[in-house]
Image (cartoon, rainbow, N blue to C red):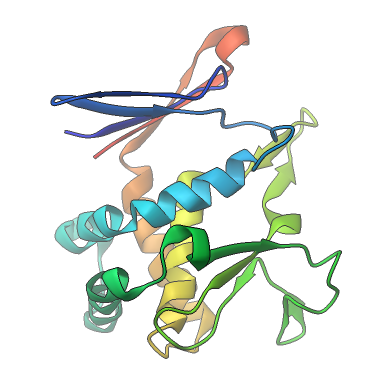
Length: 195
């Protein structure tokens, strides 16, 4: 069993034959490095094969035959995709106006229609403001939905709606394996993903 635990205290790893855990903050943005949302996207990309397998094997994913075909193609070609350090490129629409403008809308990400193309992610849309004025990062399940959408374009699926639905199905199954725990004022929120 693999366990991925996220806290607001520190970043460290634990490994042994029975437990694999990764801890990192899930609220806010770090100083001097990639923020939590960016790390969720990177971690999601590195673990995407496992999350796709989870959806493909779960009845609760409720895939249509066409969605199953697309998701299976994404799964099959993951070894042909770029390594994470080349596959995910973070850019800012504010710094490069028009870069993420697609069909008249500023998008959170974009890519091209070829396996092995980089995925460009708009850092301006990775954090949302919450009622308590904290910045909430894109969650790991949300990052996985974004990645499924973009990788679907690599398989010549042009419909944003179809890919949003497919990404949401994988996100929903992954969210079913995620539990948020109140860790008190010092730990704020702990998120655990158990696969």
